[in-house]
Image (cartoon, rainbow, N blue to C red; front, side, top):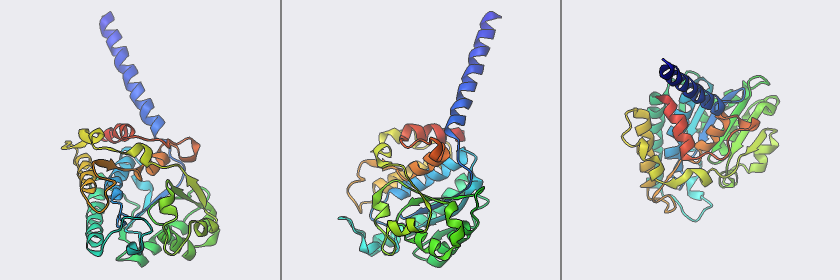
Length: 286
């Protein structure tokens, strides 16, 4: 009997430790979430990062917070300011893949009941802007909007320009790298800030989340179709071939911004997430 009670105590304590871990990692701020990614720029990292974002929101029970999703927000991808560039054929291919992964990812990790649709900014820039304008205009002190800037800032700039200035003080823009901030073809980063939004710079997420492929071996052929889909898309990005700096690497760096937001945002959110952190959160799906 004593052995049984001891074992039961261990199980209870272990369960509590797991629950405390989940509780510690899930502490989002008030408000709604908008995700704006490129993926049609030379760097293919968004192909792997976007499904991770969906999985993080699902495991945290925050699907209802996502109110905007757009991809291919590099509105003029052939004017890229970096050394490595993308051509028209590969850019069109990327748009197609991003359409497919957005649809499949939202189905695998959904439902996202407050997501009206997802938008390809290169095909329907007006629809993407109007959808983000609606999200901005709905912002209040109790329901602010947090925009994840996972690509060029131009779409965000057009939406802020067309929205109600009185709501901008309730809009937060989250960035992790000046390569996004300074890559706009139509809006500078300073122009984005001049709209009166609150800026959050959380530091380069490539530090912890651009890694060799093996930390993600656990996800390959996983029984959960969403998890195996994440591995498939990271592998696709690694083999994309447009740039050479992703070879032999899995990169979900943009998902680090969503992890930070979920884990507490500006109240102590984790700015240094790793594949191990992602694994712990994503396996809560099970």
